[in-house]
Length: 576
Image 1 (cartoon, rainbow, N blue to C red):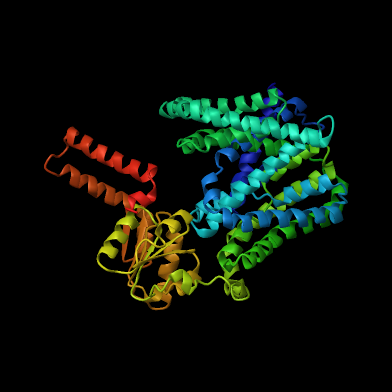
Image 2 (cartoon, rainbow, N blue to C red):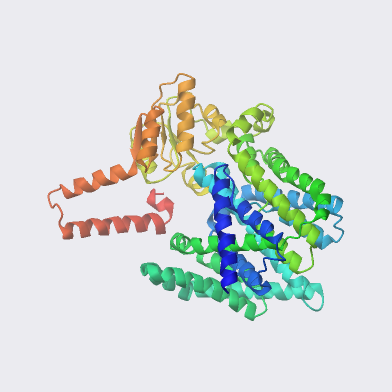
């Protein structure tokens, strides 16, 4: 045991050191974990890790990864944007699987249909860790391409889970059709069970656990591994059981707190899974033959993915910029792919050679993709002119504007409580308001609300939008996006470049972001924390001061208002 502790101490210490070093060149720690595993694996004759422990870490790591993947699923985003996702999501998945399967056939001599399809699926899945990390770091979660990417991630997760379900059936006895049918019946039964548990128990249970913070971690972990164990008990995949357990909690209002509590353990599971994965790779002289296939796989994912998303953008009348951004953000092979590849290896769908090729191609695509992410705007600037032909089919039409005059209008970006009050104020004073939002529900609600209000479904991050909607002719531009600093700074730079003096009002909840916005010339920054503090100060300085009864009355009013906003139909709130 002492020897084992020493081994794991060296493994985790080396992984931490290499991860820190790679962070200076903006690389994912996943690469560090796999490399450490590979290096230790070269000395497997002297450094022996018991096989049972390796299997245990691998399975627990996969279950925790899939539990968090299920927890992060945003079904509401998919519901709202299903039409766009049919093109962008399904199109990307189908085309990448198809061409990936062909690559597997010609590059790695994969001849069976099942192996070819699973090879294509492994190449299709994009890294949730890297993609979400980039969107959060760049504050692009609420951008048009960010919302589409989040939907694509959900679709890819669903495809991966279905692939795992069918993979489980391949090793079953009897006919394949019977095995697949039985697995899907079990999956449907577990789904019904989760729906019932969600309504009867889970909501109340996790409401209590959320109020007792010290119990939330152990409760969440117990739920994840407990449901996975139950799934295995009925001869169902525990990995898929972990994903379903997470997806069941994704509907709860406490999911963010659960993520915060479970994230550190998931990170440890990720670390151990990828170290063990690297340790299990057998790299020898035969790996030289894989250099050409890996190079083609890397080029296909890094360069082919943007080409595929641009093609889809052209066919769906999308714009070049979001199509380009989508392709260049998701152009890497996923950690989920390595999970699927590991299980394919265990099910004899893949051999060691295919598994090694996928693993090394994953490292290469993650490495190159992370570098590309640092220059993504500059790369788009180089290709913007050649890609202009895509935008000719996607310009805002006169029909969409409905006769709205783009001159002297007030541009309001993003519909929320702040913009609601601004819109009411301008409409009450006879002004024309152009509302821009990427939420389909907002568009359905507001597009014909008032004769002086025009609601457009458009991407505020795209400079073409500023030209098409005549921002230069506006009376003022008011961005109510709390997380939209990148777009706001870009508009401020554009305003300065063309010599405009149009007032621009931005919104943030950060002192530092407010200072940066003022630095670039913002007319006024709506700083939500400052306004909240000032509002509360006025409340304290009122006639009744810090009267608990007075605050209780105000609290009840606030509670009723929030309930109305969150629980009632938006149309009722707007008097429609």
